[in-house]
Image (cartoon, rainbow, N blue to C red; front, side, top):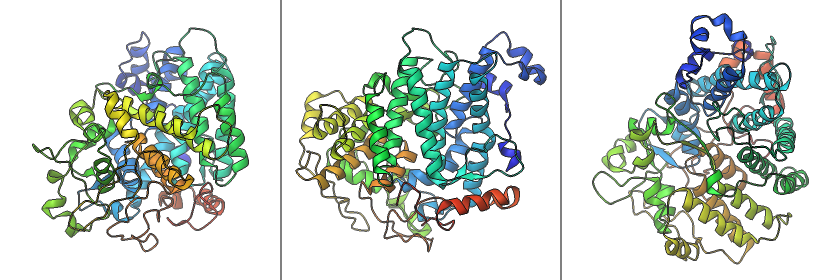
Length: 523
């Protein structure tokens, strides 16, 4: 582990080239690596770019790292997609160490070292800047959140320390530090009254716009607070209300949605792997989108071949079932071509959008928290509107009719006689139980295709009521429980490179290193 976590500026010159950084210092940096130590604001900008790009498991091996971390695990556990390739048993709950291991080492060896360096350089010294440091704190939380939500206790305090033994922190400690960092960042970003740009040439999300970073920070704060609402409701309430009232406001407008910009060399990783023919729309997506006559169906997915038919695949198919023509890639819906492989250098990668903020507000209101004057129904419907806008649905009548729709998810009529995934309509229900399921289901749609968050929220809330898997090849994760995978196991590489650290992780996990062990926030 120590060789992966030791703080260093890995491949900065290569990153500058990848991100198209035409600066006066580039030739020097590219030819004399000793000059990497002579950091200036230009190179700091692009170091931040590296942290951002690699923080979504993209970067210099975009298709590989993204596929190993997201496409083969959270995409399938969240049931956004199902696999159409026989060699991917992770859709049958098999935790492939040769996939999870490289994801772990990529994060700690390629992504986090850049972030750690940015945090240090912006905190003190010649390049110290409180605004940049605050932006870096926000991004640290964003990139670390899916990592701890995959594994639980992970290296956090010791990450980047270069120690011989890298200890793991309890998830409770990590989440409380997230809250601390976001409160600190909000106090700086939300009170900034200037017009200057920070990390302007390197910020791949907002181009250095501080006001947008303040909104992103506060909405991320609300996300973190809601995540801990079942294990520590009092703290969750306090922090959620602080986020809602924080200076700078929340991310509630489509104009402020957070996307990772792409270039001809920093591609959209989901778009890239869409051409592999290895996954297609899930049966869960088909049931909900078709049943609701959802106008986002044709925005999320393409019809099958030259037809007008949209079709999904059940999760957990056996190798024999996958080989049946009806379950092939050719006979099921791929992601929409607007963000498919043809647009992998154009379509930005989604990180956080206004719909999520509204659905978080709706849930907070049902919890009895102080969210302002709005009602849960208003927040819920605002979330639907924000998601429609994010996907370019502009027909006001169609959106209005959708909000009062009484149709329910559809049965599929497939080889398994798959029933409807749920029986709830879109129109806001009369009971709190129905309302919570509706908010969770619409949030699931609103988060698409960002599956790490969708999987975490499914584990926390139980919504939407996803299908059981057809098969499971993991005795610890039965097929009849779609939430049976509660976490991913630690990678085997830790046994040889950081055994004492691994032992601390298992001790801080709260249970055995198994997929059935619940995370701290998921009691």
